[in-house]
Length: 357
Picture 1 (cartoon, one colour):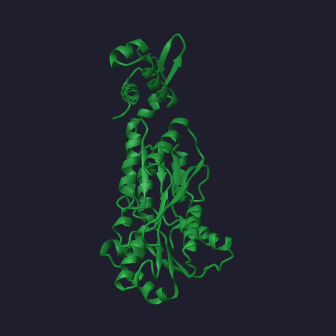
Picture 2 (cartoon, rainbow, N blue to C red):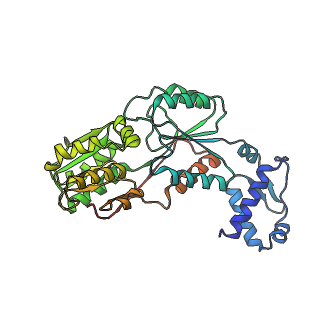
Picture 3 (cartoon, rainbow, N blue to C red):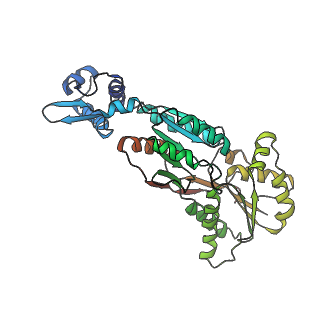
Protein backbone atom coordinates (compact mmCIF):
# COMPACT_ATOMS: atom_id res chain seq x y z
CA UNK A 1 0.00 0.00 0.00
CA UNK A 2 1.30 3.46 -0.92
CA UNK A 3 2.22 5.85 1.89
CA UNK A 4 -0.63 8.17 2.82
CA UNK A 5 1.20 11.30 1.67
CA UNK A 6 1.72 9.74 -1.80
CA UNK A 7 -2.00 9.02 -2.07
CA UNK A 8 -2.81 12.61 -1.07
CA UNK A 9 -0.26 13.97 -3.56
CA UNK A 10 -1.86 11.92 -6.35
CA UNK A 11 -5.32 13.12 -5.35
CA UNK A 12 -4.22 16.76 -5.33
CA UNK A 13 -2.32 16.36 -8.60
CA UNK A 14 -5.43 15.00 -10.33
CA UNK A 15 -7.44 17.92 -8.94
CA UNK A 16 -4.87 20.45 -10.16
CA UNK A 17 -4.68 18.99 -13.65
CA UNK A 18 -8.47 19.00 -14.02
CA UNK A 19 -9.11 22.46 -12.52
CA UNK A 20 -10.10 25.26 -14.85
CA UNK A 21 -8.91 28.34 -12.90
CA UNK A 22 -5.26 27.40 -13.13
CA UNK A 23 -3.61 30.78 -12.81
CA UNK A 24 -5.58 32.09 -9.81
CA UNK A 25 -6.67 29.09 -7.76
CA UNK A 26 -5.50 28.74 -4.18
CA UNK A 27 -5.46 25.28 -2.63
CA UNK A 28 -7.28 24.62 0.66
CA UNK A 29 -5.30 25.43 3.81
CA UNK A 30 -3.14 22.78 5.43
CA UNK A 31 -5.65 22.51 8.30
CA UNK A 32 -8.54 22.04 5.88
CA UNK A 33 -6.63 19.26 4.12
CA UNK A 34 -5.75 17.67 7.48
CA UNK A 35 -9.46 17.58 8.33
CA UNK A 36 -10.41 16.23 4.90
CA UNK A 37 -7.87 13.39 4.82
CA UNK A 38 -7.69 12.70 8.56
CA UNK A 39 -3.90 13.02 8.72
CA UNK A 40 -1.29 15.16 10.44
CA UNK A 41 -0.01 18.49 9.13
CA UNK A 42 3.38 16.82 8.52
CA UNK A 43 1.75 14.32 6.13
CA UNK A 44 0.06 17.14 4.20
CA UNK A 45 3.39 18.99 3.97
CA UNK A 46 5.08 15.88 2.55
CA UNK A 47 2.40 15.69 -0.16
CA UNK A 48 2.71 19.40 -0.97
CA UNK A 49 6.49 19.10 -1.19
CA UNK A 50 6.11 16.51 -3.97
CA UNK A 51 3.82 18.84 -5.94
CA UNK A 52 6.18 21.75 -5.37
CA UNK A 53 9.12 19.72 -6.71
CA UNK A 54 7.01 18.92 -9.80
CA UNK A 55 6.42 22.66 -10.34
CA UNK A 56 2.67 22.21 -9.97
CA UNK A 57 2.29 24.53 -6.97
CA UNK A 58 4.08 27.32 -5.17
CA UNK A 59 3.90 27.72 -1.38
CA UNK A 60 4.00 31.25 0.04
CA UNK A 61 4.70 31.52 3.75
CA UNK A 62 1.74 33.00 5.61
CA UNK A 63 -0.46 32.81 2.52
CA UNK A 64 -0.78 29.19 1.38
CA UNK A 65 -0.27 26.99 -1.69
CA UNK A 66 -1.17 28.13 -5.20
CA UNK A 67 -1.46 26.29 -8.52
CA UNK A 68 1.20 27.28 -11.05
CA UNK A 69 0.58 27.81 -14.79
CA UNK A 70 2.85 24.75 -15.29
CA UNK A 71 -0.19 22.64 -14.45
CA UNK A 72 -2.01 23.91 -17.53
CA UNK A 73 0.97 22.83 -19.63
CA UNK A 74 0.97 19.33 -18.12
CA UNK A 75 -2.69 18.80 -18.98
CA UNK A 76 -1.73 19.16 -22.65
CA UNK A 77 1.43 17.01 -22.52
CA UNK A 78 1.62 14.14 -25.01
CA UNK A 79 4.49 11.67 -24.68
CA UNK A 80 5.27 9.10 -27.38
CA UNK A 81 7.65 6.18 -26.82
CA UNK A 82 8.98 4.90 -30.16
CA UNK A 83 10.54 1.45 -29.75
CA UNK A 84 11.86 -1.10 -32.20
CA UNK A 85 9.75 -4.05 -31.01
CA UNK A 86 7.19 -3.44 -28.25
CA UNK A 87 6.45 -7.19 -27.96
CA UNK A 88 10.09 -8.31 -27.85
CA UNK A 89 11.20 -10.32 -24.86
CA UNK A 90 12.31 -7.48 -22.54
CA UNK A 91 9.85 -4.78 -23.60
CA UNK A 92 6.41 -5.59 -22.13
CA UNK A 93 7.47 -5.23 -18.47
CA UNK A 94 9.74 -2.28 -19.24
CA UNK A 95 6.94 -0.37 -21.00
CA UNK A 96 4.47 -1.22 -18.24
CA UNK A 97 6.87 0.17 -15.61
CA UNK A 98 7.55 3.38 -17.55
CA UNK A 99 3.82 3.88 -18.06
CA UNK A 100 3.02 3.28 -14.37
CA UNK A 101 5.43 6.05 -13.30
CA UNK A 102 3.98 8.54 -15.77
CA UNK A 103 0.40 7.58 -14.90
CA UNK A 104 1.19 8.24 -11.25
CA UNK A 105 2.06 11.80 -12.29
CA UNK A 106 -1.08 12.12 -14.44
CA UNK A 107 0.91 11.82 -17.67
CA UNK A 108 -0.07 9.56 -20.55
CA UNK A 109 2.30 7.41 -22.62
CA UNK A 110 1.58 6.48 -26.24
CA UNK A 111 3.73 3.53 -27.41
CA UNK A 112 4.44 2.92 -31.10
CA UNK A 113 6.75 0.42 -32.79
CA UNK A 114 9.01 0.85 -35.82
CA UNK A 115 9.56 -2.92 -36.05
CA UNK A 116 13.21 -1.94 -36.55
CA UNK A 117 12.36 -0.63 -40.02
CA UNK A 118 13.34 2.86 -41.20
CA UNK A 119 10.36 3.08 -43.59
CA UNK A 120 7.92 2.39 -40.76
CA UNK A 121 9.85 4.87 -38.64
CA UNK A 122 9.41 7.52 -41.35
CA UNK A 123 5.66 6.94 -41.61
CA UNK A 124 5.23 7.27 -37.83
CA UNK A 125 7.32 10.45 -37.71
CA UNK A 126 5.22 12.00 -40.49
CA UNK A 127 2.10 11.22 -38.45
CA UNK A 128 3.62 12.72 -35.31
CA UNK A 129 4.31 16.00 -37.11
CA UNK A 130 0.53 16.54 -37.18
CA UNK A 131 -0.11 15.56 -33.56
CA UNK A 132 1.61 18.27 -31.45
CA UNK A 133 3.87 15.93 -29.46
CA UNK A 134 5.47 17.33 -26.29
CA UNK A 135 8.15 14.65 -25.86
CA UNK A 136 9.29 11.88 -28.19
CA UNK A 137 11.35 9.13 -26.54
CA UNK A 138 13.14 7.11 -29.23
CA UNK A 139 14.97 3.83 -29.50
CA UNK A 140 17.11 4.21 -32.61
CA UNK A 141 16.67 1.98 -35.67
CA UNK A 142 19.72 0.34 -37.26
CA UNK A 143 22.06 2.78 -35.56
CA UNK A 144 25.13 1.26 -37.18
CA UNK A 145 23.98 2.80 -40.47
CA UNK A 146 23.08 6.36 -41.52
CA UNK A 147 19.43 7.08 -40.80
CA UNK A 148 17.34 8.53 -43.68
CA UNK A 149 14.80 10.12 -41.33
CA UNK A 150 16.97 12.74 -39.63
CA UNK A 151 15.11 15.48 -41.54
CA UNK A 152 11.84 14.52 -39.84
CA UNK A 153 13.41 14.50 -36.38
CA UNK A 154 14.73 18.01 -37.04
CA UNK A 155 11.28 19.08 -38.23
CA UNK A 156 9.75 17.77 -34.99
CA UNK A 157 12.32 19.72 -32.98
CA UNK A 158 11.49 22.85 -35.00
CA UNK A 159 7.85 22.26 -34.00
CA UNK A 160 8.91 22.41 -30.32
CA UNK A 161 8.89 18.64 -29.74
CA UNK A 162 11.53 17.60 -27.21
CA UNK A 163 13.42 14.44 -28.19
CA UNK A 164 15.04 11.98 -25.83
CA UNK A 165 16.84 8.81 -26.88
CA UNK A 166 16.89 5.55 -24.97
CA UNK A 167 19.58 3.02 -25.80
CA UNK A 168 21.21 3.90 -29.13
CA UNK A 169 20.94 7.50 -30.39
CA UNK A 170 21.41 9.12 -33.79
CA UNK A 171 24.66 11.13 -33.68
CA UNK A 172 23.34 13.59 -36.29
CA UNK A 173 20.80 14.96 -33.78
CA UNK A 174 22.35 17.16 -31.10
CA UNK A 175 21.09 18.70 -27.84
CA UNK A 176 18.74 15.87 -26.95
CA UNK A 177 18.40 13.91 -23.73
CA UNK A 178 19.87 10.42 -23.80
CA UNK A 179 19.27 7.52 -21.43
CA UNK A 180 21.74 4.81 -22.32
CA UNK A 181 23.38 1.76 -20.85
CA UNK A 182 27.09 1.68 -20.13
CA UNK A 183 27.72 -1.03 -22.69
CA UNK A 184 31.51 -0.86 -22.51
CA UNK A 185 31.36 -1.40 -18.76
CA UNK A 186 28.95 -4.32 -19.29
CA UNK A 187 31.16 -5.96 -21.88
CA UNK A 188 34.16 -5.50 -19.59
CA UNK A 189 32.35 -7.27 -16.73
CA UNK A 190 31.62 -10.27 -18.95
CA UNK A 191 35.20 -10.33 -20.21
CA UNK A 192 36.50 -10.44 -16.63
CA UNK A 193 34.17 -13.35 -15.84
CA UNK A 194 35.31 -15.27 -18.91
CA UNK A 195 38.96 -14.76 -17.94
CA UNK A 196 38.30 -15.86 -14.35
CA UNK A 197 36.88 -19.07 -15.82
CA UNK A 198 39.91 -19.49 -18.12
CA UNK A 199 38.00 -18.98 -21.36
CA UNK A 200 40.55 -17.65 -23.82
CA UNK A 201 39.34 -19.01 -27.18
CA UNK A 202 36.39 -16.66 -27.58
CA UNK A 203 33.89 -15.89 -30.31
CA UNK A 204 31.27 -13.14 -30.32
CA UNK A 205 27.83 -13.32 -31.98
CA UNK A 206 26.70 -9.78 -32.78
CA UNK A 207 24.08 -7.95 -34.91
CA UNK A 208 25.37 -5.89 -37.81
CA UNK A 209 22.65 -3.25 -37.30
CA UNK A 210 23.00 -2.24 -33.61
CA UNK A 211 25.53 0.42 -32.67
CA UNK A 212 25.76 -0.75 -29.06
CA UNK A 213 26.99 -4.19 -30.17
CA UNK A 214 30.41 -2.76 -30.94
CA UNK A 215 30.47 -0.91 -27.61
CA UNK A 216 29.75 -4.14 -25.76
CA UNK A 217 32.45 -6.05 -27.63
CA UNK A 218 35.03 -3.27 -27.17
CA UNK A 219 34.43 -3.44 -23.43
CA UNK A 220 34.74 -7.21 -23.54
CA UNK A 221 38.06 -7.01 -25.40
CA UNK A 222 39.41 -4.44 -22.95
CA UNK A 223 39.29 -7.04 -20.17
CA UNK A 224 41.58 -9.30 -22.24
CA UNK A 225 43.88 -6.41 -23.14
CA UNK A 226 44.18 -5.47 -19.47
CA UNK A 227 45.56 -8.95 -18.71
CA UNK A 228 47.85 -8.94 -21.78
CA UNK A 229 45.90 -11.87 -23.22
CA UNK A 230 45.42 -12.49 -26.95
CA UNK A 231 42.54 -10.36 -28.22
CA UNK A 232 40.12 -12.25 -30.51
CA UNK A 233 39.26 -9.22 -32.65
CA UNK A 234 38.56 -11.30 -35.77
CA UNK A 235 36.31 -13.82 -34.06
CA UNK A 236 33.00 -12.09 -34.69
CA UNK A 237 30.02 -13.88 -36.20
CA UNK A 238 27.64 -11.23 -37.56
CA UNK A 239 23.92 -11.73 -38.03
CA UNK A 240 21.42 -9.47 -39.79
CA UNK A 241 17.86 -8.22 -39.30
CA UNK A 242 16.81 -10.85 -41.85
CA UNK A 243 18.13 -13.59 -39.56
CA UNK A 244 16.18 -12.15 -36.62
CA UNK A 245 13.00 -11.90 -38.68
CA UNK A 246 13.30 -15.60 -39.56
CA UNK A 247 13.88 -16.37 -35.88
CA UNK A 248 10.77 -14.41 -34.80
CA UNK A 249 8.48 -15.71 -37.52
CA UNK A 250 9.54 -19.37 -37.82
CA UNK A 251 11.97 -20.02 -34.94
CA UNK A 252 14.52 -20.50 -37.71
CA UNK A 253 17.91 -20.77 -36.01
CA UNK A 254 19.84 -21.70 -39.13
CA UNK A 255 22.42 -18.94 -38.66
CA UNK A 256 23.21 -20.25 -35.17
CA UNK A 257 23.41 -23.88 -36.29
CA UNK A 258 25.86 -22.69 -38.96
CA UNK A 259 27.94 -21.05 -36.22
CA UNK A 260 28.01 -24.28 -34.21
CA UNK A 261 28.92 -26.28 -37.31
CA UNK A 262 31.80 -24.04 -38.41
CA UNK A 263 33.17 -22.46 -35.23
CA UNK A 264 32.24 -24.44 -32.11
CA UNK A 265 35.25 -26.70 -32.42
CA UNK A 266 37.58 -23.68 -32.24
CA UNK A 267 36.25 -21.96 -29.13
CA UNK A 268 35.50 -22.52 -25.46
CA UNK A 269 33.45 -19.40 -24.83
CA UNK A 270 30.82 -17.35 -26.71
CA UNK A 271 29.94 -13.72 -26.00
CA UNK A 272 26.34 -13.17 -27.14
CA UNK A 273 24.80 -9.79 -27.89
CA UNK A 274 21.83 -10.55 -25.66
CA UNK A 275 19.98 -13.31 -23.81
CA UNK A 276 17.83 -14.12 -26.81
CA UNK A 277 20.84 -15.11 -28.91
CA UNK A 278 22.37 -16.94 -25.93
CA UNK A 279 19.12 -18.88 -25.38
CA UNK A 280 18.87 -20.13 -28.97
CA UNK A 281 22.62 -20.80 -29.22
CA UNK A 282 22.47 -23.02 -26.13
CA UNK A 283 19.60 -24.93 -27.75
CA UNK A 284 21.78 -25.53 -30.82
CA UNK A 285 24.75 -26.59 -28.67
CA UNK A 286 22.53 -28.99 -26.72
CA UNK A 287 21.23 -30.42 -29.99
CA UNK A 288 24.83 -30.94 -31.16
CA UNK A 289 25.59 -32.63 -27.81
CA UNK A 290 28.20 -30.00 -26.93
CA UNK A 291 28.00 -29.52 -23.13
CA UNK A 292 27.49 -26.01 -21.73
CA UNK A 293 29.51 -24.72 -19.90
CA UNK A 294 31.93 -27.67 -19.62
CA UNK A 295 32.96 -27.47 -23.27
CA UNK A 296 31.68 -24.02 -24.28
CA UNK A 297 30.61 -21.23 -21.94
CA UNK A 298 27.86 -18.83 -23.10
CA UNK A 299 27.02 -15.37 -21.71
CA UNK A 300 24.32 -12.85 -22.59
CA UNK A 301 22.94 -9.39 -21.77
CA UNK A 302 19.61 -8.16 -20.29
CA UNK A 303 18.69 -10.69 -17.54
CA UNK A 304 15.46 -11.54 -19.37
CA UNK A 305 13.00 -14.32 -18.51
CA UNK A 306 14.79 -16.50 -21.10
CA UNK A 307 17.73 -16.85 -18.70
CA UNK A 308 15.82 -19.12 -16.34
CA UNK A 309 14.02 -21.01 -19.13
CA UNK A 310 17.35 -22.03 -20.65
CA UNK A 311 19.08 -25.30 -19.75
CA UNK A 312 21.53 -24.53 -18.33
CA UNK A 313 20.35 -21.10 -17.11
CA UNK A 314 22.15 -18.18 -18.73
CA UNK A 315 24.85 -16.16 -16.97
CA UNK A 316 24.13 -12.58 -17.99
CA UNK A 317 24.06 -8.90 -17.08
CA UNK A 318 21.26 -6.93 -15.45
CA UNK A 319 20.99 -3.17 -15.19
CA UNK A 320 22.28 -2.14 -11.77
CA UNK A 321 19.23 -0.04 -10.93
CA UNK A 322 15.99 -0.96 -9.17
CA UNK A 323 13.47 -1.81 -11.90
CA UNK A 324 14.92 -0.16 -15.06
CA UNK A 325 11.52 0.87 -16.45
CA UNK A 326 10.70 2.77 -13.27
CA UNK A 327 14.10 4.50 -13.35
CA UNK A 328 13.58 5.52 -16.97
CA UNK A 329 10.03 6.70 -16.22
CA UNK A 330 11.37 8.93 -13.46
CA UNK A 331 14.00 10.35 -15.84
CA UNK A 332 11.33 11.14 -18.44
CA UNK A 333 9.23 12.83 -15.77
CA UNK A 334 12.23 14.80 -14.56
CA UNK A 335 12.93 15.95 -18.12
CA UNK A 336 9.37 17.26 -18.44
CA UNK A 337 9.07 18.89 -15.05
CA UNK A 338 12.53 20.42 -14.91
CA UNK A 339 13.21 20.96 -18.63
CA UNK A 340 16.59 19.24 -18.52
CA UNK A 341 17.62 18.86 -22.15
CA UNK A 342 20.82 17.55 -23.67
CA UNK A 343 21.75 15.46 -20.64
CA UNK A 344 23.12 11.92 -20.97
CA UNK A 345 22.54 9.34 -18.25
CA UNK A 346 24.42 6.04 -18.38
CA UNK A 347 22.93 3.12 -16.47
CA UNK A 348 25.50 0.59 -15.16
CA UNK A 349 25.32 -3.21 -15.41
CA UNK A 350 25.92 -5.94 -12.85
CA UNK A 351 26.85 -9.58 -13.43
CA UNK A 352 24.33 -12.35 -12.69
CA UNK A 353 25.98 -15.76 -12.33
CA UNK A 354 23.98 -18.78 -13.42
CA UNK A 355 24.86 -22.08 -15.09
CA UNK A 356 26.15 -21.22 -18.57
CA UNK A 357 29.60 -19.97 -17.42
